[in-house]
Amino acid sequence: MRKRRNLRIIKWEGDLLKVKPYDEVLIENLNLGLVSFPQNVVVVLKGNSKIEVKQEVFLVLHNESKAIIRNGGHARLYEDSSAEFYDNSKGNLYDNSSGKFFDFSVGYLWSTTKSFWQEKIEEIPFGYFYDNSRGHLTGRAAGFFTDYSQAYMIDRARGTFFRHALGKIADAGAGEFHETSIGILAFKASGTFYDSSICIKEDSYMDNIKLYGNSKFFSVLYKFSSKKEWLRWSGAEVEGDYVYLYKWVREDFKDFYGGTIDYSQEEIEAPDWDPLFNDECGKGLHLAVDPWTAFTFKPFAKGRMLKFKVPINDFVVLLNKPLIFPAKVRVKKLSKYIEELHLKNGRWV
Image (cartoon, rainbow, N blue to C red):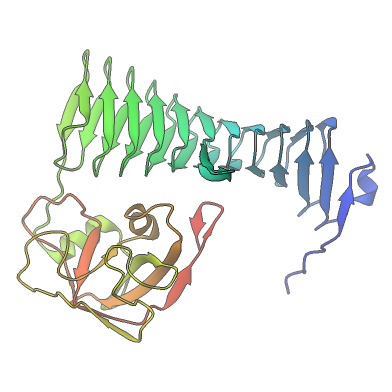
């Protein structure tokens, strides 16, 4: 049986013997250096605090606090805080926070909008990624990538890439690629390519691509000859004669674009279904092969992620035609969703 978390909150007084597993430790305006906490402790830093940890501890940074995190630790950064992540550590960055990621560590960056009087100000976190680290950027988050690091960017995220870095960009994201970096762009993403960088475009929108120097361009439009081929390509979760597909809907379970289809019903049927329709948008209920793909069609809107179990014979993939949105399919009707997923620490669970 899993032990329940102790809700005890204590203020750091320098005595580790007073800190017990599942405590929440508050540290204010202290420069501590390297500290080893018991397991399952949450450490909250405020003011100008500084700390270094080498274990799987969870940190929350506020104000202008700083941290160095190693060996699989996890931190959440707010306001103007900053941190360095090493050895498979993870960070979630919000507000105007910043992070440096090394050694296969992972960063999730989310821009936020705050209201001050009658003015809305968008706060933008920034990440530096090195040494095979990975960054997931959404909103107007921005990052610098080099040395085989990778980026996954949607919405209006921005990235600059050097030395074998790889950027996968969709929606209205944008990248600037230098040296031997590679950009894979889809769905109106934009990119500027210099030196010997490579552009791989996964759709037919070409207006936002600029090539300079010895940069190279390749176009890859996905085309499938059978539904079986699509299932193999997509990596969709298949169970017998069924496939699991996902839909991102409004908080009231209605679709984002028309607001007329209620996805909470026991049975849902497309009002505009046309079995002969030969385009990707419209004429059916549209679902995606995974939660992140579903989310990119309306990122940062408040909503619900629904998981559906769909008979393989019931969904439609356009065949023998180049596709701009290859991970999206349409169906005539659905049975009630089987699960609602929630985004926690960068994963849909």
